[in-house]
Length: 457
Image 1 (tube, rainbow, N blue to C red):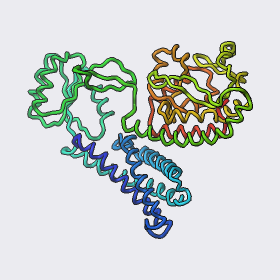
Image 2: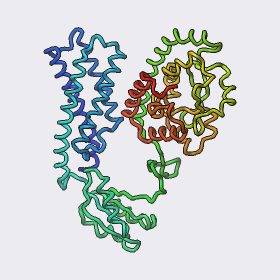
Image 3: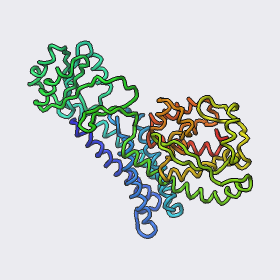
Image 4: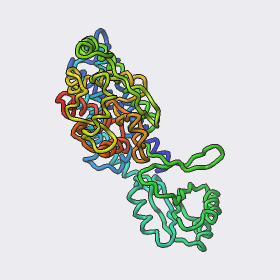
């Protein structure tokens, strides 16, 4: 299969998936009403379907859930399909809630559509996968790859390529070279059939390889040259340009433009709902705070956001107004190891403050920050200025992503953690494994944490 077929597969799978989703919805609609009609009050069913199909399209291309599709076994394919349909269920609830359709839309139709779609999608994917593997087995469909390796590295190169290549590539020949023999390698393969070439010669100077690469270029063959890069650990790299310089860019980011757009869309929707809830709570919490202790209803503090940007964070005030001044004398009672301050039965917390902290109600004004874009619904913990000034390079990487209202540190029992390095570890784990699916999972776990009060003090 040529390289473009891999791209075609993405769009074909998208088309198959949205067709199955629409069919599943119509089947569920027919089972519920014994007819398929979008007239009268049922026109909201058509509108709902259109919205879900558009949102699923965003999810399809943002999450890249068809990545490694050809290599997934039956079980992993079932897991992938279930994850996708779980997202659809969450999406359906959000759409129904935001549109105020809870009375007009049948829950049985939505639930039935999700179950039917999961079944049909799994069957379709397994059939397509089986057909695709047979097609790829043909010589004319897979990309024929020639492997050129430095002497002593051929076995390692072969193993790595076979383990990492998807089904689109087929190694047709392998050759070992040294500094003397590499110059004549193109002459040997002028009459050999292959589509692309991979060169792994880290100890042979690039200037020696230049005429070899040009030779393959003259043949019209795509050439992949393995760069002898510094040890970059978990960072990803990309070749590009900066001004007139050709550069290799290292990045710890795992995000994509579409993924970040979808994440921001979730933030806007969640922030809007959260601000409304904050306004309602203000009617009750505001007077309680004022009656309990003198001072403003809201507490604001400068925090550090993405890549060191400063912003004002907002909370319902849970401490006396002289809390910051009293913090210095209480530092000896700090229960955290590291840069954060945490104290059991902190005397600076008011009576109302204890309640709103325990129930996490004090956090709701942060939805203002989410709506503004200073924070995200899910992210890393935003540090104070004092913490930030003591950061090293390792700690600084926490700021490579927008801080969140909740995150790994919160759903892992934030008040049970006694070591700042553990907070950093959880934040970096989130950054390295970020996906829209992970955000949704953390949001659900946060709801459970808030309802049961686990980890909140």
